Amino acid sequence: MSDIETLLKRAVKEIKPGSILNLGIGLPTQLLDYLPDNLDALIHSENGVLGSWKQAPREQMSASLIDAAGAYVSTVEGSSFFDSAVSFAMIRRSKIDLTMIGAFEVDQQGNLANWKIPGKFSPGIGGAMELAQKTPRLVVLMSHCDKQGRSKILQQCRLPVTAYHCISRIITDKAVMDVTPEGLLVREMAQEMSPDKLQAITEARLIFADKVGVL
Image (tube, rainbow, N blue to C red; front, side, top):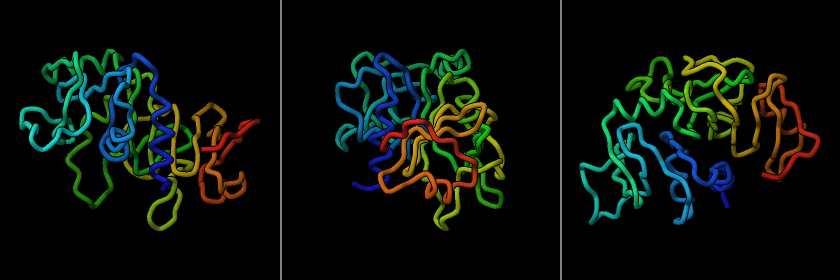
């Protein structure tokens, strides 16, 4: 099993029965492939779908039924459709229980940077800002280090920030960490990790739970 598969299978455990969740572009969208068919939860898409589901088979693809990332999706029984005003009213009134979102980098204060890398094209901050500010529980799914091996878990974000003090939990291919007033609390680690190894690849200062589970 790859590190990303491990991350995504772990992320599924964050979904509570009866909840409404939003899945951001990137790794969170890939989570759809790991969700059980009998999932007792509804996926919200900010372009106006509640009950969005996995990618539709080619013969059932409809240009009228896409998610916020532009993917052709299917829906579950009992799904509903509405305009963007209603969709964002749901977000702003904290009716979304859980958002899983990707990130370029995060920091130990729970700040999120996921919308712009200076010098590169960005379509805009989009719904990420609203979701990060108004969702009661925000879980970030991301690789622990970039392609050059540099930590993406920082003491302070260096890229433009999407929202401040918004992250509840960070799940990477190396660890599960909670944002606390004292710092990042490591709850689980990959099997090959030790506290020293994990800290060596993490810029932010880590705190380790009394009993750290295996990711």
